[in-house]
Amino acid sequence: MTQSNPPSRKRRQVLTAASALGAAALVPGLARAQGAWPNRPVTIVCPWGAGGGTDATARIIASLLEKDLGQPFNVVNRTGGSGVVGHSAIATAPPDGYTIGMITVEITMMHWQKLTELNPTSYTPLALMNEDPPGVTVSASSPYADIKALAEAIKASPAGKFKASGTGQGGIWHLALIGWLQAMGLKPNHVAWVPSNGAGPAMQELAANGVDIVTCSLPESRALVEAGKARSLAIMATQRNPVFANVPTLKEGAGVDYSVGAWRGIAAPAGLPADITTKIVAALKKANESKEFRDFMASRGFGVKWADPAGFAAFMAAGNTAMGGAMKAAGLLPT
Image 1 (tube, one colour):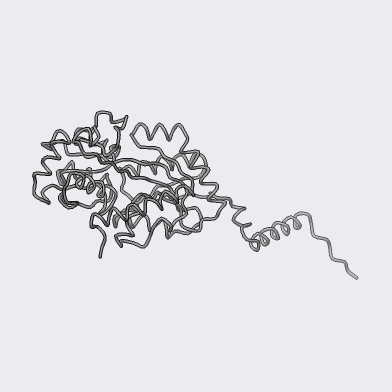
Image 2 (cartoon, one colour):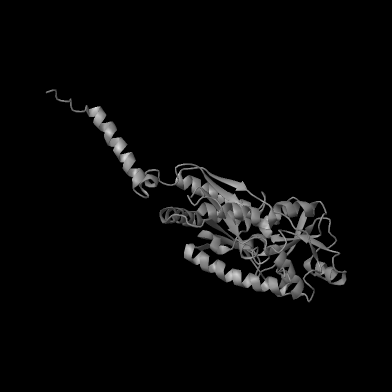
């Protein structure tokens, strides 16, 4: 009787490795655990154009996550549809952690306008990262040297003479303009709104004299202001921004007590696994608290704010209710 030879040591190692791989394929989560997230580049979708505050904030966060987690975090601008295109790209991506994105205050507005069915519950909320009030900016060639002169000219003008921009129709900077007009006793459409794919394109249009006013955050208008192509006349906040200390509040400059703010946060598609959520939230908190992030945001006048997934979800829910009410009052909701 011929006995079979026992397998060699090398063959046993190969068989053991193959068995382990087979087991990993059969045990839920084991295969993914062996390639722990992130083991390849991650895309961060930005729904707004390059050069704006959302883009700048997304890029500093991406650089900090890349340093911390050891993989490239690539910011991709997906603009269009008043923010719908980019927000949809985040929501419809596979929930595997390799496509996340920066969602903005517009996600609490777009569904009210029936631009999309997306709303804050369409995502896995990860972290609220910042909040900013808007300013009122005019071109360097504008005849209005201060906010009081601009306000008086707007009041004296026929509806539609002045044109403003800063974001899409019904976006936060549009609502900021409407709130200011209403606070002055004017109708919401007294100044015509020209939709744009974010503050960056709107500021370029302002510099080219295509619009008269841009309502966006002071940091978003800063580059063209410092280049001598624009002037910031006021901020829609309860107090001045220390980085832009020469820009008065609406109340100081024109006697109008009105303030509002925009926010930005990081989210993933709904259904992101808990282990990936935990890991990325920890990295985002570390980034938010880092000196590099704080210095970057302070140097540009961006406000820093933090909320964890539960806090971010509650924050968006409250904002969603408030924005729906504001747009209804302004007549921006479709019938």
